[in-house]
Every structure is written in structure tokens, then in C-alpha cells.
Amino acid sequence: MPISKYEDYQPYLKLLLDGQKNILTKSTISRFCLSSGTSSSSKLVPFNNELKKEFQRAVSVWLNNIIRNFPTVLSGRSFWIVTPITQTNYPDSKIPVGFEEDSSYFGYIQKKLIQKVMVVPDEVSHLNNSENYYYAISYFLIKERNLRLISVWNPLVLLIIISKIIQYSSNLITDIEKGSLSFPVRVSEQVELIFKKYLKPEPVILLNPASSSHPLSFVSPMLAETGLAPNHGEILLCAADIKMSFLWPQK
Image (cartoon, rainbow, N blue to C red; front, side):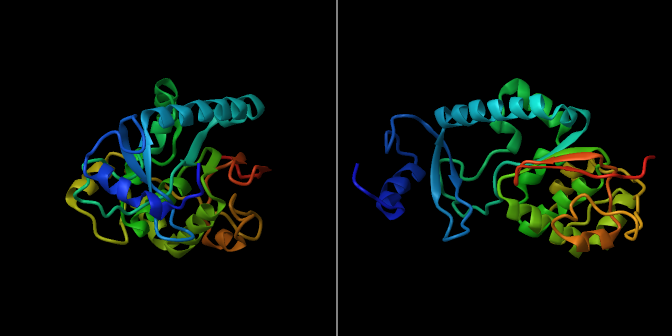
């Protein structure tokens, strides 16, 4: 095949957006995913069920390998971000544009199991505003006291989350203690109702920064100054392929 670039395919992608079939592939395009847009504007990536099954098979092998080599991940909950947050701007598309929930990239049985141990609920992935998205992730992440696995699609995402925890630390403490979720950018009543089932008042454990550190302070020591600390033991960080152990005061 000749060397080509994204712009060469844009006319065909436009036809697919308009609902035409048998363009670029004979397989049915179930949705368009968007590239992260880190180096340029986001690009449309056609996605079909065959590609989804390939992802699920690959993730299944990877997940089984983690469980076999790090069985302690089964003793707690997990934080996953499989896909980046993307803001879609294709209101007239005949095909959905954007990623599915992260749990959809697992097989049916695995999806049901993963949903039970995921710290951040699937509904967070539908928050289109990035500030609300990262605030919700920060909220569910820091209030979880038994985190065992962190898996993000890009290590920079973890840095962003840490910066948001630092930025909104006071608001996060208040929300956890009151059982509320105060999004930085106003959301609809429907969105508030969606998250209401996950909210309940909980005490916040504050550590003494002089004697303890936050499990994510290996990236940003400033995070320890917030005093926010889940009751973690051992955390497996998949983004950087590093296994880390931390000591925490017991309940």
C-alpha cells in the first residue's frame, strides 16, 4: 500500500459519518473513536466489533497476567482509565462518536466483575467537561480506602489527576464529609441524579505529612501536604510498570 496520511481518508470518513456503508471496510462501523489530540487536533478512528473483540482478547491476557503475578490486586479495588476524555462535535453524525465506558473493553463476564471493583463508576466517562471529569475522578479515587491497582492509558493522566487533587483539596474534603459532589462547572439535574446513588457522608482520614506520605507522592510530594490519604497497602501502577509498597496507619 502507498504511504498515506490522515487527510487522505477524510472524504471517506465524511461518508461514514453520513451513514454510508462499505466505505474503507465491509465491516459495520459501530462508532468513531477520537485520538487524544496531544500532538494535533483529534482524529476520527473507525471502530467495529472485530476490533473491539481484539481489544478484549488482549486485555484479557494482560489482566490474567496481572492477577497471576500480583494476586493482592484481588483484595481491593481498582482505578482504570482505558480511554482518554474527548469532547465530540459531530451532532449530525449517523454513527456515535466517542469512546464507550472503560468497562466495555472487557469481555462480558470480566466486565461484570470489573464493574464491582472499579473505584470510578462508568458514568464519569460521560462527563464532557474536563474539569468535571477530573474532579469526579479525584473524588472517587481519594475516598477509596482499599485501592490496589492503578491503570491509566498515559502516565501524564496521573499527573493531571494529582494536580486536580491538590487544586481542589478543600472542596474534595468537604464533599466527601457531606456526601455531596460539587462539580466545578454546573451540570444538569439529570447528571446530579445519576451520581446521587454513589454519594454518602464519609469521614476523611488526614495523615500527618511529617510522618506519612500519600501513595501518589512519588510523583508529586506536594500531594502529601493536602493530608488526603486512602488506607492503602500495596498499589500496582500499570502506567509505568512499577510495583510500589506504602505503609499506612491501620484502622
